[in-house]
Image (tube, rainbow, N blue to C red; front, top):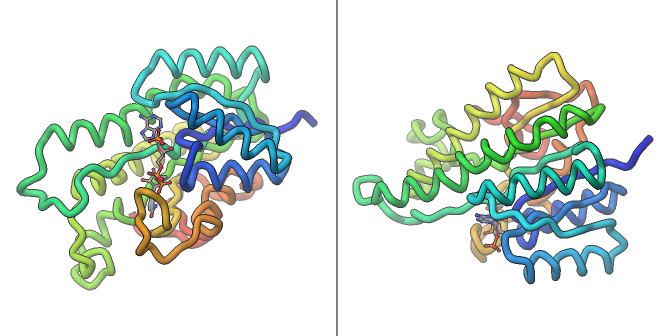
Length: 243
Ligand SMILES: NC(=O)c1ccc[n+]([C@@H]2O[C@H](COP(=O)([O-])OP(=O)(O)OC[C@H]3O[C@@H](n4cnc5c(N)ncnc54)[C@H](OP(=O)(O)O)[C@@H]3O)[C@@H](O)[C@H]2O)c1
C-alpha cells in the first residue's frame, strides 16, 4: 500500500501545524501549505526534526495560481492526494456589531474562508479522486451553527460575541461540505466539517480553554476516518453538532 499524502493549508502555525504533527506521527506524508516561504520552511524543519515526512508547498489560498502549482507538484510527486485539510482561515470582525461591520470585511472574510477554499478543493479534486480513501476536512466552527446562533440559551448567544462575517463564512462553508458530500456519496471520498473547539492560538487567544494538542484532534480524526465513518457531518471530538 502506498503511503498516504495529506495537504494542510495554513499549516505553518496554530491548529494546522499541530494537525501536521499528529497526522505525520501516524506515518502520513505531510505537505505543509503556507503562504510565506520562510514560515512554511521553518514549520517543515520542526516537523522533520520530530521524524515527520514533511515538505513545504507554497500556497496562498486566495491566489489561484498557487493552487495550480500545488496541484502540479502533487501530481508529479505522488500522483494522488489522500487527505485535504482546508484549515487556513481568518477572523477579521471580532467584537464588531453586525450593523457596523463593513461589507469589505465580509468580502475579505468570505474570500479566504469560503471562495478560496472552494477553488482549492475543486483544483485538487481530480487528485483526491485518485486516492482509494479520499478525506476532505473543512475547518469550520461552532460559531457557524445557525441553530446555536439563533438560540438565546446557547453558549454562543450568551457569550455576546459578534463575529457575524466570520460566523456566516463558516455557515457557508458548512453548506459546501454538505453538498460536496452529497455529490460524492457514491465515491471513496468523505467530506466533513470540523469544529476544533475554542483553542489557544493567535486566532483563539490566550483565554481559550483548549490546548493545541486537543484542538487538532477533530481534524486528525476526520482525516483518518475508516470507510464506515460519516460524510457530510459537522463534528467536534466525535460529537455531531447542529447545523
Ligand atoms: N482557534 C480557535 O479557537 C478556532 C475555533 C474554531 C475554528 N477555528 C478554525 O480553525 C482554523 C485554524 O485556526 P487557528 O486558530 O489555528 O488560526 P491561526 O493560528 O490564526 O492560524 C491561521 C492559519 O491560516 C493561515 N492563513 C490565513 N490566511 C491565509 C491565506 N490567504 N493563505 C494561506 N494561509 C493563510 C495563516 O497563515 P499566516 O501565518 O501566514 O498568517 C495560519 O497558518 C481556522 O479555519 C479557524 O477559523 C479556530
